[in-house]
Image 1 (cartoon, helix red, strand yellow):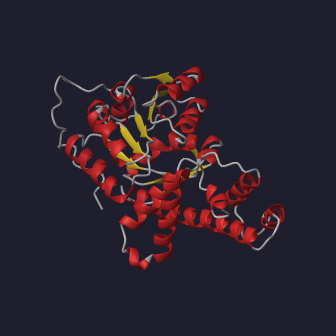
Image 2: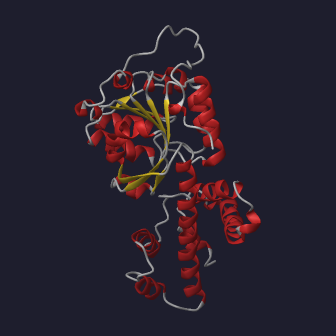
Length: 329
């Protein structure tokens, strides 16, 4: 596991960046100069959110509602404009978004997208000295370690937190996410107001990389739950049972969590619009299998193969619950 960039010696300086004589002195740098006890400053940190998809958009909206100064950027400008109408500042590029930010959140699809924003589009180079980068995308273990290496080599004055979240779009909108955070302990107090605005609780897992590992564990369980719901509904159909009767029996069962109950309710309405797209679910299962001996996880491997076939049949953009429909045909 890669060491946390935030724990490196302050004597190490970042690589020279062409055209930059100094980095802006923000609240983050001020904190390092002795403002650790100023709670009011902790509550007014400027936050940049890069990536406004199904998760990033409601997360940024919650930051705005919490009163944190928020600047947003997205590859497609529409979601950013909507947040601008709610009070966020809209940036034209990742580099512009982060220049005066104390905390930078990336919430994009995969490791390639994170690296493109951080390196190709200048985010990492333009971050303020002492700023926190909360990498909250689900990118797996290997890509997280590569990102940590980039920060260690190019910007050791930036504090990297590996902090994916447990929960889909619905919980994100209701501020019910669980943040699976990892990184240097000295950053926890600084980031707490931001994470508190995003979720119901934060679980600190250890050094950078532990959060991404924990997210893979979480999403493997989620995949089995989604598959179990789909196969139970398909079995009821194959046995000739009325779907409403099956749903009525399962709803309220001690076996059914709140998450599963919401999924069953959507299946009952034939509502498969994406809260957690099947293609992303497959990506997360594959990220986990990439890190282990797949012969020890035959059920997960079989699930991934089944989900791959469903994606190839054009179901990837729909919610994981669409498996319940697919298995009945």
